[in-house]
Image 1 (tube, rainbow, N blue to C red):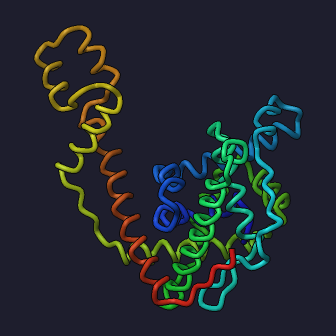
Image 2: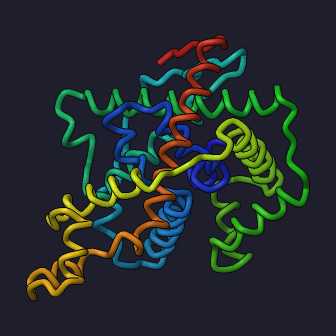
Length: 288
């Protein structure tokens, strides 16, 4: 499948793959996104399209969306162990990435004078698609399966991202995608998710790692040392300290979020190692 909203939703593992395989500078901007944020962005995109059709106040946003020249992109951008990655697949992910930057106020085409950023994002996109293909192939090699129940559960969750069944079906129709095709993508997603879980196993997050990340977050917000600041306010700090502390959640409040972020980072590192190994052992040709 090459439709960008399906890439965002049905292939939820793409965040991990992008972090694992993408270029350093470009992937850093994507690294913090969770699967939920992907769904949010896609819903916002659908809402924006709907507003535009209804004559909503979305003109400025639409004007910022890039229209890249893809005439130099070959029909087959890469081959992975005999399987082709088409220009259509590349275009969907590449344009979606540029649109994400544009939504954050960055028009890569206008700001990238020498074209280096576009080349980097193009390479990142190819690496992402290669990583996805390698993981899907490895899941098949390990004979990992997805049950009908698992597929139906993911499909139901996906439908809930839309306001109604009618809106969901309209989205499918607008992209020229059948529900059978979508279910096929979801089956791949489930199998790859199982592969990632098998390969990464249980990930341990230590108190020291949580405290280190928390203190980095506090310092980035200009709050000084997180743990010390918290103790001082509890002992009766000044009003200014109290104000600063009120704007910065405590370590215990942030612990669940920080633990999840660290777990994701460690999982991404393990996925990267797996993709690197599969790519080294496989037959990968990039035509870009």
